[in-house]
Length: 318
Ligand code: TXA
Ligand code: MG
Image (cartoon, rainbow, N blue to C red; front, side):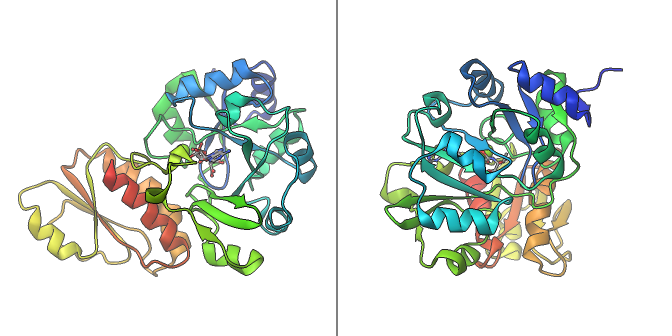
């Protein structure tokens, strides 16, 4: 029987070869993939996702050699970062060469590239003679999918999903570009900034307010559940402000708040990796409960806590 969710690598490879879109598992979130060298295929990504074409896509590769197909003048620090963190949750924004289409990069002279750390997807890519462009496999502005079922709920049978199980990391990649030799963090994500600095020294944090956004994904309305979300430093105080409402709490480690319909605990042992892994699954679940509001607890601003707070802030701003 036909099923949109599959583990059949050959079927997915054939679809990609024939210019179709396939959702692929990665360690961060599921991606909506298509042949990055075929504009007609890439257009299908934008169309399926409802994403404006001014927002560039990340290209996914399976070997460092593929960098040569896509880039020129790769900075030394980018090479160090690739060596240390690939395959893994790090996207490098690098000068593109003429082979990369303007559709993929939204006309930018740079291309975002990542080698995902997922066995099935690496095997899929190794059998293709082109890299794939893939944004997160959610409709524009919605919460990223961290399971094959999440993708299927968004797109139904219109999109074949390669089922690689739940995403281990569960939060998008960290995105790093370069100003001359200086690494610039465009999006906080699965690799903590502290780990980046340990590898290449000081980095600059791209500040949204100061510039026009280089990465449109950095704009406020992103990663959002349909339910309004409040990011709170004091859950008890926030609870008292929303009396008689159907409240869901997304707490860091406590489960003893009273006054809400439901409390989801990101990590009872205050493990930030575990919290990142649970974040989107819990947002998906809370969003399906017809709540009036989700009150989310702000996490400590260290390591992956910074990436999680970033996503919760954007969800609040939407
Ligand atoms: O973990 C991830 O990065 C996932 C998985 C599927 O790999 N992908 C992902 O893609 O999150 P997407 O498209 O949802 O977010 C990528 C962000 C977008 O905000 C886009 O604007 C930015 O990367 N981006 C892509 N290419 C860029 C470029 N050349 N310059 C600046 N920003 C870029
Ligand atoms: Mg996305």
